[in-house]
Image 1 (spheres, rainbow, N blue to C red):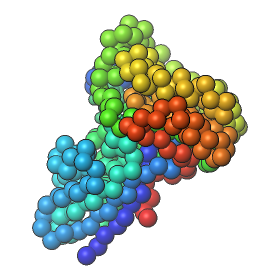
Image 2 (image 1 turned 180 degrees about the horizontal axis):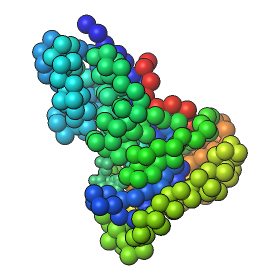
Image 3 (image 1 turned 180 degrees about the vertical axis):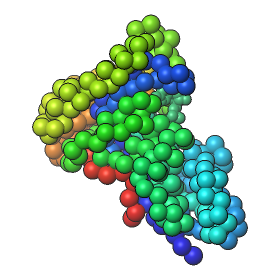
Length: 314
Ligand code: C5P
């Protein structure tokens, strides 16, 4: 029986700007996404019956069609019916390490791994851009999760322009286990509160998206200047999530008050918050300080680092 084990890393947003509405109901975004070492493990194998089976060690993760992983396998079966018939069904086992509903693209990176895994399992020989195109039909962050590294993402988040990778920047990540923020809610609330300021003209939207290439953040990344990157962190969604979730605001303020933290920001639609530190030792120290300040067991804390790739075979 053929099987593959894939490593599916989480992401953080170093930059997230909402610039306008899209005709498809989504938002035009300008983001800089970064893969981190915190990753899930996905085992995928062929089975004799033409079915899709999903297993997961995490009680909060559904194993039915509501799981993006199931939908990714279903999409591949629909797109490649001959391969599905030839190789049989797929059995997928998810080992979750990435916090769920955290703004870290946990679900998207799992789905990305399934697309890559089935491509290998069925000898389809798809190119990375073909896989990214399939991924974009399932979720805006999936193309990035396939590619990984340090990437400018525009449009819905699916148009990618890679940057030189930022390896070995140390990150402390914090997430309350029981706290979840709906991405759809965060964007909808942002539109209600700030939509009047959106750019409307297609040319203005294109110009704003293009301007990111000459932004201070991209310059800092090209210079591999961690201090400058830390100063340029930005996330528009903080404007709606922080006021609505006092625990997230408290975490954000606590990180900012640590002397060893050189920059801090909420990731994606939250509620996870990350902090950049100059060394692993300092990151470990910050983790201890946060744990001391918030002894609540519901708070999960990780020390991780930036990495240069997305989905990989273990
Ligand atoms: O694409 P994905 O399923 O990850 O998006 C989740 C939700 O986030 C969407 O349903 C939409 O409400 C919002 N979103 C958006 N604009 C984007 C990406 C996501 O409004 N570019």
